[in-house]
Image (cartoon, rainbow, N blue to C red; front, top):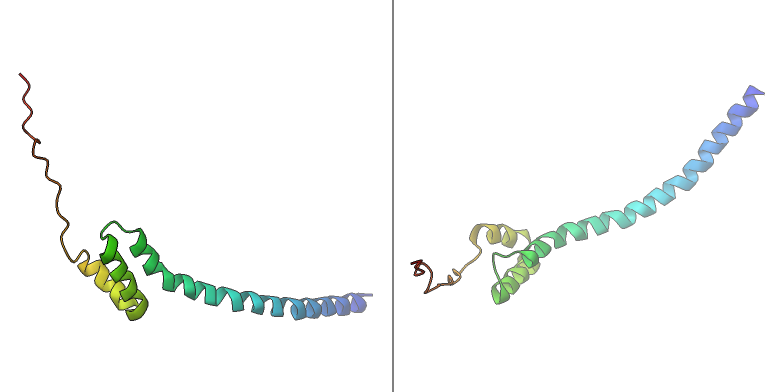
Length: 99
């Protein structure tokens, strides 16, 4: 009886492996490219959501990422913004008098 149980157990494990291995291979075949795509898109998403640049400068940085890859992302963190934003000046700031 123990021999039959052991043979059935070995057969069940062999059958499970023949089903699980292709399923895991399919999952990895989908997960790895999607993971790489997410890693490739990550700098683009960070720049798109960043407040350091705006408008055309942001678009230029994103195009640099697309065509020059990660080097442009490193330069973005080192150099952005290229031009300084004009500061808002409040002409009446500090002129309030409380009498």
